[in-house]
Image 1 (tube, rainbow, N blue to C red):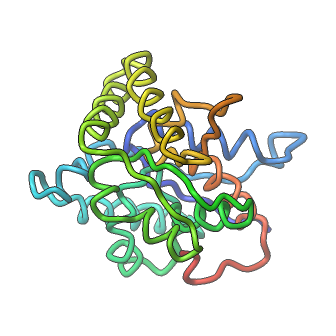
Image 2: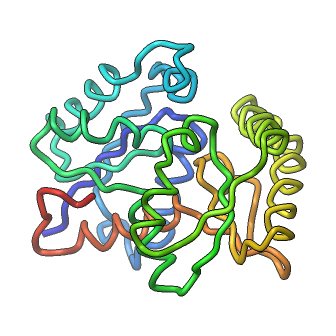
Length: 234
């Protein structure tokens, strides 16, 4: 029997829909009934994770815990989060529920190791960069990360918030410019370390984009169809 996937969503709404769409797209289904049962809590009222981490905003932890507990009570067997930066609060959320949470940065690092990507650039929010979610995850798998400098990082944030505001073209312009610069500095691939980024950046002849949302979606499918779900997936 398939497991039920719970998505802590709303961070942002478009990224949540993107994750759900990827789970549906990658599921090898021939009819409706072959698809995985997904419960989504599109809780867009969760305070901004980056501003909180930088000490400028409301703590999102209670909201994230509420969402996780709602999903568990609704029948989810394991959870995923449609936000990279939210994984800073992973431990607190996991301790509040009895079902496991899949850890997107660690899943991405495992993917990079398996595919022999040893030097990668990272595009992510200020909060994700500061907490070193991806740097630590990649380091544990022997992968070196190249980060944007201060001016480049400002462009990354401009791009991310442009996408959140619905200005897709502006977001693509800023983010593609920084991605290309990281490739010039030696990156063999670019981690799209914010769930908005894969909405505008895609792999091309000169650019390899690693999409953690896609990796998370495929891991969710694998775990949902496994016979057992371990307590600590992360």
